[in-house]
Structure formats: C-alpha cells, structure tokens
Image (tube, rainbow, N blue to C red; front, side, top):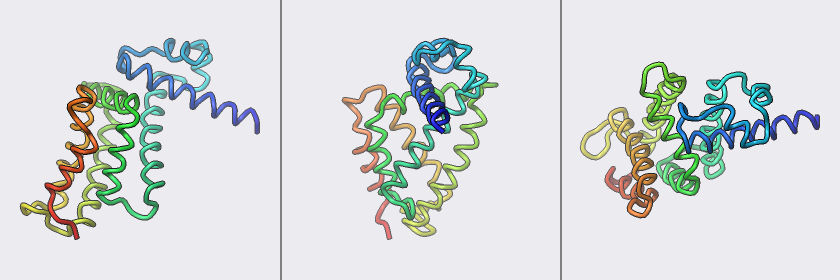
Length: 191
C-alpha cells in the first residue's frame, strides 16, 4: 500500500516536471532526459513510469483536463453553466505554466503526425458538444443574433482558447477573466 502511494506520488512529480519542461521547450524540444533530471531520476527510471515520450504526453494532457474538471466540479457539482466557465477562466489565470503547456501542445498538434493530434481532435469534439449543452441551458434554442447553440459552441471555445494565447503573450494588456466576462455579456441575456 505504501509502495503504491509512493509510486503515485512519483508519477505526479513526473507529470508536473513534464508540464514545466514542455512549457519551456515545447513538446518537440522536451526530452525524457530533461524531465527525468528535473525529478531526480535517470531516463531509464522515468521509462518505468512512462514507457514512451508519447505516453508521457498523453498523461500530461489527461491530467490537465482532470484538473480543470475537478476545479469546475468543486465549484458546481450539478451542472456546468457559463458562470462556471468564467470561474474556470479565472482559475486558469492563476496557473500560467499549465496554460502555457496546453497552448504549446495545442499549437504543435496541428502538424502532421504529432502525437497529441488525436487527443486534441477528440477533445475538441467533446468540448464543442459540451459547450452546445451549456449554451442551450443558458439561452434555449436561439442566442442573440439568431445563432443556435451548435453554431455558437465553436465560437465560445475559440474565445476561451484565443484569450489564453493573448494572455500568455501579454498578461499586462489582457485580463483574461475580465475579457471572458465581457464576451459573455455579448452573448445576450440569459434565461
């Protein structure tokens, strides 16, 4: 039992180190050796936890999504609403390293044969479907301007991700949580 707990702790340390290294160097520039060194392991020791660089990448991405989901669930266990998304944006503004890693991987994943491409493709399918549900719960079948929730969902997702890039590039000029709340007012009155 104690060995299992220690193994889980070490795995979490490796994921945090991988987040940092990827944020600094991007996925292609990150090496297993650099991640291993950051947590005091040999590269062979790291391979015990993650047999390939791709396996480590997928674990980093899944962990990031779990942090977001857990943070959101802690704020509202019943249903996601636009207000909860605004809270998630505020939460992201407190963890620039995680946002930077996610953004770097997202940008790199559009290239052919990138190991995160399938993850992000599937993730965006899920996110658009989820945003459609959130928008429908808030506005019904039609938003201001006549858009359906299905039409507005990719736009909402693009605003969230685009604000992250702008904030990372110039955090003094872009107040990500405030800008997201401003965007929500553009969507019109909610039910």
